[in-house]
Amino acid sequence: SEHFIATKKRLRYVRVNTLMISKEDLISTLVTDGFIELPKTNSYDEFLALIAECTARIEVKEYFVQDYHLDDVLVFLQNTNFHDYAPYTNGSIFLQDKASCFPTHLLSPPPNSVVFDTCAAPGNKTLHLAAYMKNQGNIICVKQECLSQRPFPELVAMLNCWSRPGIEVQPPDSKSNTLTPEVLRKVYAVDKDPKRFKYMKEVVELAQGSDVVETIFSDIFEIKMAGYSDVEYVLVDPSCSGTGISERAKIDNHREVSSGRLKNLSGFQKDLLGRVCTYFPRVKRIVYCTCSVREEENEQVVEEIVKKFGAKFEVEDLKQHPALREWTHFGNEKYENGAKCFYALPSDYCTGFFAAVLVRRDDGDTIDS
Ligand code: SAM
Image 1 (cartoon, rainbow, N blue to C red):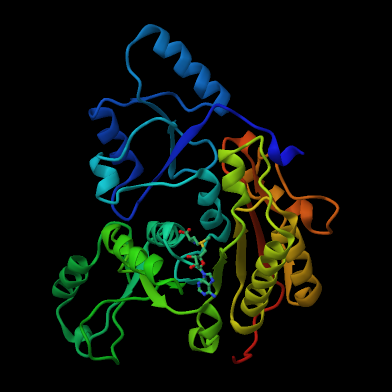
Image 2: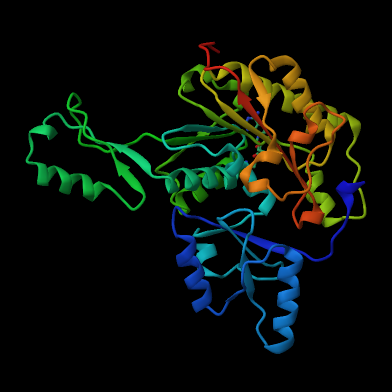
């Protein structure tokens, strides 16, 4: 089927960790270090053709281009080696498949929002969310009892020393009595696997995400959602069969996943998504994604959730999403909402990946867990 169309030409994607470096500064660093930036192309075929043309003329191997869908992604040839490269070892860049960079852009939490990442380790998408939110200007709320009585220039100087580029400072709250700036925007990142959780905590520190990210070691089913009543944006990236990744590695060899395993996985995925739809009182937007190419874990999960929660949530038509204007792969039309869902496939030069966005129809309620 279309899902298993192979492509031998492979690319490597680099996500810029804008918590640490701007895309422009990273590009300057790359160029200084001998990489060559090619003009932005309209397709990867054009990018590969340009490289072929260049390598015929000069002896340089390291080329890159800015991605034409996502503005925080750069594209390299797959054999580009970053393992000892400082921006990689210091957390300024992430080697993250392009497909898995879409969920953050699809969730697109605006300034001041609070995000819950239900299955977060090793933290790639958590950190991407943190970067996405900071880029839009963090809000720091400054509180001090007598601030308003201080001379105005002194007040401005104090606020300025707390602010960083891209951070907006709110006027002081005259009733409170602490001088600590408080970051209001937050990404809660939950995982239950001890090793993966430990790794995620380390990476969050390394990548300077800890200002915004709060890591929580727990089974998501044990969490009292009502304690997170301020959450409006949720990412659901559950354990899955990983068939999108294995298809990429063994592209012509459709690896079997037993029907029992698929049933267990899709049961877990439906329970989890259903829990998110039920218990976060103010959730507005949910991204559900997997690195699976199986309908049982993708369209069928979405279909069942819409059947149960259709009065509360609808599936957003991702064909209309600004980042997906020229995208070619969407879900199977035999499902009512299938065609509104995103697929990335090897023929997009990506791992197999699925994403759906559920949008709240009303203004929220107050159900407790
Ligand atoms: N979002 C991650 C990223 O982008 O780096 C990848 C998440 S991975 C696909 C799925 C994660 O879900 C695994 O780390 C697994 O430990 C976690 N997980 C599975 N069941 C869970 C549960 N019941 N509660 C919390 N985490 C769970």
